[in-house]
Length: 191
Image (cartoon, rainbow, N blue to C red; front, side):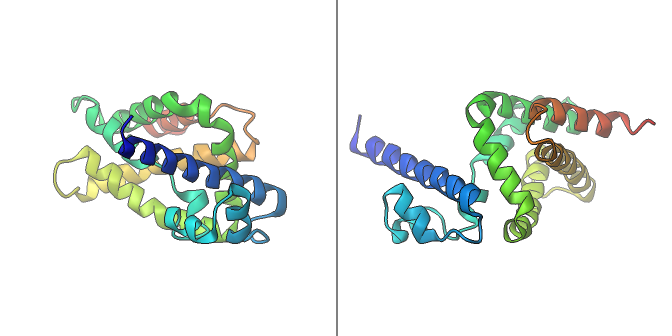
């Protein structure tokens, strides 16, 4: 193992430890009642180290590597597939690869994001960036209006599945809820 590999692995471990401790403390004490200093101390680092990994307190909950993974999965799908299907299957593929390992922390992060006003506000800001990434993954060049609308609808389906998952406290499995949400999107609503 090279020195560079070791440093990257150590950084990833520190980042993960910060997120784990933040989620634990936010769950135990509440998001607003927990300080960055407390999170850093629980992770065994200084508060300055915290800010090297996460620019804000919100970022320790909201930051993840899912968007780049999703974009790569969409681009890897056959362009002959309908766009909604490409996004749906890319989400399922990406989620399938990580879900067993991240299920519980993802549920905690999603619950915090949806139920904490400061995080919810940032979450909706992040939705715009995610929509642009989804639209860009479907098209070469600048995505057009129709592609942005379609990406927005797919993101709304995913978000609604996440909201349902949190509302049920994780009783249902997220991949199944995502399938259900995309089924409604593809087939339409039936009473």
